[in-house]
Length: 360
Image (cartoon, helix red, strand yellow):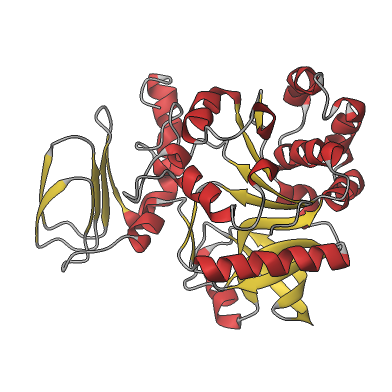
């Protein structure tokens, strides 16, 4: 029997530009079945939390552009469980709206916040970790993030330095560092004191609202102005009128890096942030040449460590290719070394400058 005061907010409003050209503004990666399971990343995220949170306590926050996709993929959710942002303003305004929305319904609510594009392979361990996290924040009134032991000096993730132990895998957070340079990431991994920031958070609704008031008043004040309208028929009208004027800032910069009330639960449930082609490569089965093929036919000669993702019936034939991304989305063909994939965002920006939105 799940606790009726526990909620989950799934954030799925991003464009996923690092997965371009498969992830497009019209159908971002969270709505795509990348793993061939018959379920999109969003649907898999939803399935994963149902043993922990009542179906009616799931809230999806997305851009209003994606409302039809959310309704198509999660038809069992009611309209008031889908919060449609009229503008993209990063994660702090997204989380703030969800917290005020849920607190109006249930002042005693505890909230798990999760991205929609992660993969978890050890789901039983995941469930135990989340239940422990809920119990911790309900007992302590803390802000909790989940930390992943790093397996490589990844420069695309944020890092958490652990401080004093609280027992059972919980630690006080000493510092946050967002996307360090390679040399610093290597030091972090070698030290054993740093964990990847998974982007999964737990807290009580009233705790995160109070922390927003304290550390991000520009964000909190906007929602405080409409506090009487949350949970009423005028909530959507208030959001459509005021949300676009909110500053765009991540929850990490707005609150987590400033608060003295932040803790980390160090977990090991087979987590992967499917945010990049390399992450998908790492998570996918490989053939004897360590190549990955996603829904396509490939003849690869003297080629290793590549990922091939090609729409349609096209045959891919390559010679002498090593550690590359080959992604063909029909109107866009991307060929890029995996070691340079952090530049894909720049490629997307350059494409926009050169061709407008045609290929995005």
